[in-house]
Length: 116
Length: 112
Image (cartoon, each protein chain N blue to C red):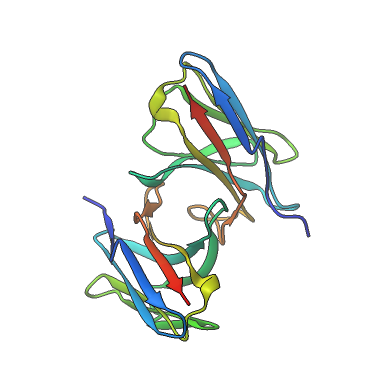
């Protein structure tokens, strides 16, 4: 069974640009959640999508947005990039269901974003 | 304020030795607590999920304990191996709301 796939794995952008990251969940999983990981802050929750609807949202500015498609694949977009957005962005999939984040999380390898 | 604190921040041990990592939390009401292992440059991998009623749960050489009264959890690693070198992250999920609460992790280095 294929795991969670994130693309691209590495990317470099400059301040003011925007970026789109992609996440393909495990087949059959309906929940996709996104996280930002930095050395100083650790892992921080961005948002979760379930059946194409944003079900939960963390405390990030509106520059961070996402969406989920009918095949459960998800994209995350960051507009007007700032230096502080440099981080490892992780996506996780889970079967979904009732309750917050419905079950075990399976993480991808992450997309490492560097903003210059 | 909901918080998760892990200690120590980093730890170096000799191969074959045991170690214990700590996680204290103030998250309430509590649903479950999870331990993840994250190798450098990789995504986190789940080690255990513990609910309110569980005191101990093992996964091979990893044993997690939970004291929901004192809001403390520990992860004990026995007979450490070089491959145990990683960051260990404690995550607490409340019963209500829509947030995961992450600790900043303990960086473990196992040396030969």
